[in-house]
Length: 179
Image 1 (tube, rainbow, N blue to C red):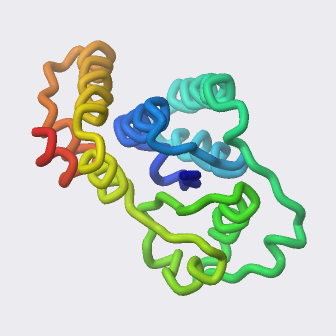
Image 2: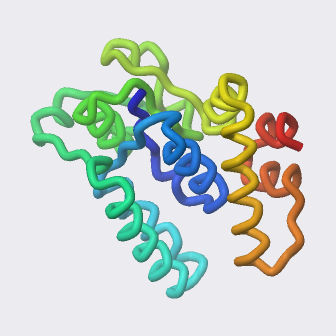
Image 3: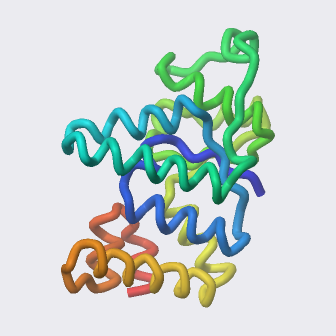
């Protein structure tokens, strides 16, 4: 299954680590566009200049880890599409161009299910998506979560526990399942 990751699910670090960890275990193939990655990098500016530099470094590492994940499309594709928020049309275009099965986003209202269905796509929020993967492969998701927890503890020098970490990352169903 190919899944287009919207910028809003890539920017929160723990959410991104959980999604890419599941992808790394073969649960799905991630997709994104240069514009989605640029949105992520620019959105980190509000945290500070170091955050943008770190995001750009992580983007470079993602390109190495997922060389086929970045999709592009002709302008004519975007021109024929419509969404309630025109600023999100590029996300739909990327999903179509990458032959994605679904879009993973927190932005449900701007990706109406009927419009996505016309393009053969569905939409899920990251918590529902990851919880579904956990239901199918609980041991694999527990392994991914353990790796993300260990990394969060190492990088933040905070003794995170699984449930609070995932709840803070806006993954409450997964937090309860793994908690």
